[in-house]
Image: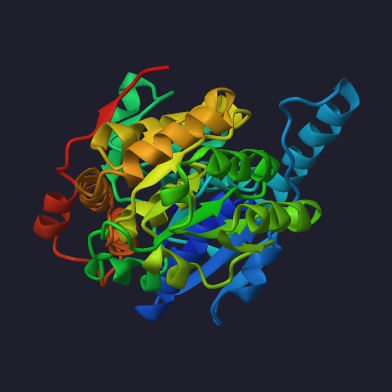
Length: 392
């Protein structure tokens, strides 16, 4: 905010259009709007998921594109889009005069945060993963605070360490509510609900490996399974038929729109380790076998998974090692030991941050020096949690 400028009471969010950036930005927007604050958002042309956000969130779209991994002509076009996006963001910020800009990563956050910094507007970055993303690495020097979801953050410069505040990644209230409804201990011969979600990337691996792994299990364990599995459209029939041939009860769908209900009954998850998935699992207190997507940028899914494994809430199985036999042995060892499964659930729950939306709201308000935040003393207590960084 330029010197002498009166406070507008506006929080401007900036997020790329992919789900990992969209969901926490959406959660923060709704939490701020619920407090009666003004919130507007800047995104790129892919940010269609914001159309379903709560009424009251005005959306602006700017040009933005990634540069990494492109050919020379595509890179030149992307640079041009970023420059045009910067000019669009600069004009927008000059007109809106926000008190703070919150960047959630992705292409759209880069020109918006750079333009905000150039205008003297205070900046908060939110990093969802255990490795600082490329956009946030570029913007870290411009930030007044960096909200993190993990205690250890890779690819962080040592001189930015004092900007970190552990807030967590906001998740839906219906999932947080599951913390108080833990599943009862497994009975020796009772049903076992498995929830398998592959995400949008690489779900075919789960379709190939999971039925074959189940086939490797002892019959006495296999017949107790009740499986809910996400699969690509092209795999639905084959996966369903494979489980039917094994005599296993399975509900195989392209997408689950009732995830809180699925999590409520799940005894074990087999899933990727994207930021939103890990945040939901730990907020709900559900143990998991994590198979990170191996081609994620900076291998951030592996970093996320290892953090939860170190806390005791998950087992990590690299995709290269996820053969049917290996996965079957892992499942048998966990599902055959109810005490171990209960301990993993408790550890996952302890690793979760159920009030992430509240912590993030308070950090944003405190950084912007806006009202409706907690007292400085209470806010400072929330930010004294140990944050350790790993330099790039």
